[in-house]
Length: 279
Image (cartoon, rainbow, N blue to C red; front, side):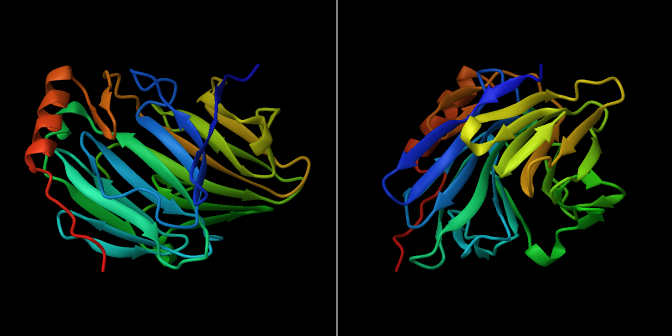
């Protein structure tokens, strides 16, 4: 039987809903990922907030009705368009905010939280952006795979990121089966996005509130994906586990209690910077 992890439905008011996968204190079972929100956002939900110790990554699905207006306390401001990705490596600490670019329209996206190796958790924050048109795409019979992070079938994302991960946005036509090789050293998981996806012969859909984890299960490191019941969409994540503890307080996550206390103190002192009110 395929190992699974629970997806938790979350709502913040009427403008934010998500299916959330969250790791434990040692980032299991999705290390080096700390969490993933499969989210639908139709209005401003979260005020400017801090991050430290990890990377906050926003990936908008191409079917998103609008983009995200992203800004942070280090002067970065950009529009994340449908199909694009923005990576904020929070490091020693940053304040950021993301809101839908157009009112009355819904953003369909992933909010991905990726741990930083402990020695990188104290570096200065920085941001990386990948425009939709620059995301590599692999076409296979009955399948389309976007590669915003990592490498697949000989094509690579142009981004050089501080934690080794791969993310594949996979669309399959009904009846299509593909084999995905998981890189050596990586541990993978698959989240259903639309329709029903079969992962190594076990079905997953949004109504099941589960994700397939601890992949691959076979010695050949192949994960078999199949769209048996209709067109389907899923995302496969993988990365090399960091194997370090995770101490959290709100949106801060560090590898030691002392580092967390230092980050909390820094934020309270204003060391992360501030964001002015939107005009």
